Image 1 (tube, protein in one colour):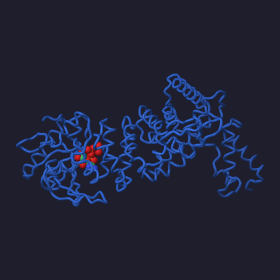
Image 2 (tube, rainbow, N blue to C red):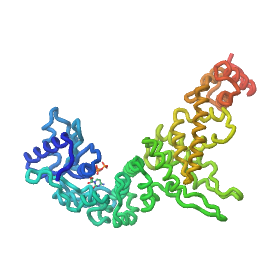
Image 3 (tube, rainbow, N blue to C red):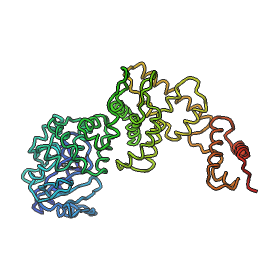
Image 4 (spheres, protein in one colour):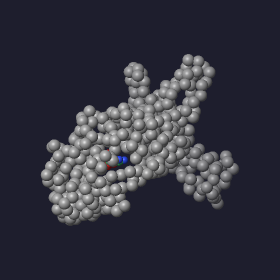
Length: 472
Ligand code: CTP
């Protein structure tokens, strides 16, 4: 079997083969490297399994490089890693594993290559290539993984209940691979995911978030999220997302299914951005619709304030999913909070003031916000889509015009809180905020000019009105 490796990879595999021969341990390339090579996907690391001590083999291989790379090893797991300039190589001894029911920690015993292949997650991930002299390059494929690769099927090598009970993270991996590779999960395997969904609870939030991010970084994340939903996993790992599903009817008035609308928005945005956090904003933009839903006589269904409530939900969701609590989270929150603003600017007679406020509030994230708004158009009516897109083009043009005139995107009002405190001898207080807001609003509304003199005058007027005196 020929696998299409680069010259560098071939040289590397030869080196490993030589080291294994000298140690007299059978060894194989296995897992994702073999799978990805066979389907022409980029690879950055290679897993090597040997029937012997993986750490000893890693040391031997490292010694064949000049300068010798460091060997990072984990004695408890019997694994070792070396990083060469071109590739990361992971070494492990072949294992036979059985798992403890309440954790993902396997009880490890040394085993044969067959044992090792048996304990892997999917037939397409259990493919191995011999690096041994007698059959170098031979594909070892006990579960017909090559056929599953050709037929684009994800299937467990053993009875799926065993594979998933052993390590429930594999249920998410199945769905993630299905989304990444656009493969179908074999019926039996899919059924087992639904059956064992509850077992995902023993998996750490970090690992779950990692898989969610990988799904979200695919070209069409709806494939993965829909599978998570249909198998019941989403309800357990991210209930607020699953709760978007369904449409309620009263007096014949329904609303759209916000789960499938969101999936469409996510797929739309993925055509225009690779930014994980903007993609998260698409996932979360309508997250508060269930919490704000009302049926109003004469109006139908409303979701008033869902952008504000949704914004407030973002930090909680990020905490629960162990996503970062930093500027990425604040960016997502801001996108959720602002996602209706550009739509409100597509009406007639929009004032410069409204445009200025959007530029000020969105700042550097203006383009990202417009990308989200454009993705939010999910009508099936082509005429409508065209009209909405044209409306957004108008908003962009108006914003460009006002920005050119007023430079508000990264603008800070000319008078700061410190300057106000200094002038009136005030501690940080409500009064300081009131004066600051008055100045900012007056400039954004065009009531005073955007300069220090005009802002100072307004500060003094406002302070007099509030009964404050300047510091002697
Ligand atoms: N594996 C497994 N069960 C897991 C994780 C990994 O059986 N829960 C096995 C699979 O054989 C997999 C290999 O370990 O191919 C390497 O794992 P990993 O590097 O996580 O996955 P890859 O398949 O290489 O793919 P990716 O890097 O995209 O995660």
